[in-house]
Amino acid sequence: MFSKSLLLWPAVALASVTIEDPSDVIDPKWWAADNAIIPDYNIPFVEVQPSDIVATHNVKGKAASADHTTWYATANDSSVLLVSEKGSFKGSYITFEKRGYSSNLDDASFWGFNAAINVANASTAVFDHINVTVHNGAAGVYAYGTDTVVNVTNSWLYSSGPVSHGLYASGNGTIYGSNLEVYSGGYRSSSFSGDSPAGYVYVKDSVAHSSGIGSATFYALGSIDASNVVSVSEKGPVIFADGAQAATLVDCDCTAGLLGGVAMFSSQIRNDADSPATLNLTNTKFTTTGKTMPGLWFGNLIGQVTLNNAELNTDSGILVVANYSQITQDFDYYASYEDNSSLKPAEITVSVSESNLVGDLVAYNGSSISWALTKHSTWTGAAYSGYAKSTFDVSLDATSQWTLTADTTVQNFTDSLRTLKNVHSGGFTLYYNSTVSTWLGGKTVHLPGGGKARPISLTSSRVHRNTQSWRI
Image 1 (cartoon, rainbow, N blue to C red):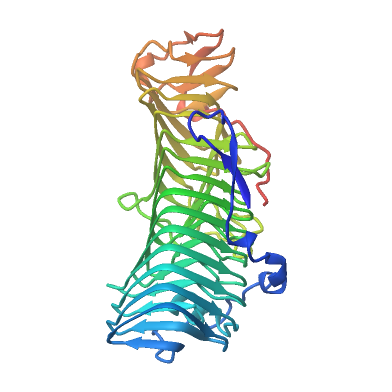
Image 2: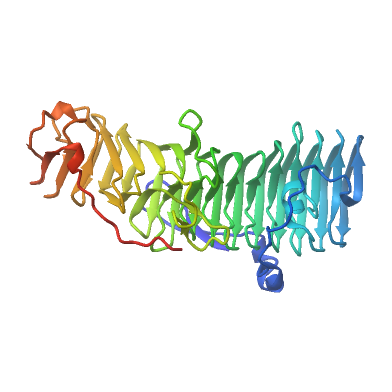
């Protein structure tokens, strides 16, 4: 159970409501031993889909349906329902209860072993008003393979143990979910997940709650598309993504308790600029509760971000971090050069419209942040570079304003007004690179509020160090 503001807009809430999720019905402490299991992924990966998936109910290469019944599976490495080989299934008002452990968590992650519902190999399934309860570590609804499509509506999903994602798509499978209540209590068990090589998850009008370490609301390996989702990730980000993935959230209100509101990075080679990771937040609010957690965190990644009527509320006062970094398997800190010498700096472009944002931009180890304010946006904050020279580009259109909260250095500074009247200095200095921001003519210019815009050369760019260690 968690509370959310009754009115997302305006920013000042008039009241609050209590939102229920499946953990209010099944107390997670009853399954504390499951949720304490730390998965071991140091095992051989099976490259080919196994053919021996076991299920209590099998729909193989045919059409079937069921309603108003209860189905069980209790054996390890077994599913309640398997739909495979271009089969189809329609189920309504069904209770699926799954117990029994997964002996191989890679098989559970990538092939759906032990999932309550496993739909695979160009099969389809439609579910409405189902109750899926999973104990000991298993996904709720799993979809695998190209042309596999699953629809789940008006349903309730509870899970305990590792790899216990609510909706879980892999191998280019697709899941659509609406009017869902989802709780996952295990380690690295997100509410809505896509996995290798890609999963496509579409969720709307739903409530999600995850409580395990590293468990996000959305795990993006492929794409996530969500609208009107209210969520809390107690020990994970709202969005966790590895590589050049895509996430779009509209009309969502989400809270994160670990890493950041968004944690997007590459655990392998950094992606190319022509295939960036993308993040789009529209009419959406992210809240981060940790004292060092940024709203958006990026490492070893090239990414494009769009914030339209978005709100980032952070206890840390940090909006965006870009770093030469990745996240460890144990989710205990952001890894650095000492952990992986093949990392590269993050290069992040953020386009802001119709938004009022308060907080700082922080770039480490040669990373860069390009920050553009458009369509009546405001930003109150500064930019800091840490541990090595990083760069910031800032642009303002004629309708947007920036209020400085500290001395800040930018490379390419653009002001559509070309008067600097929309930069409120508060007595601070805006240092600009005179060889890039040539329109200022290399002059020192007085800013509203008593500060100044001063030129610097490329070689003498000032570095404002932030001593935060960024351990989680």
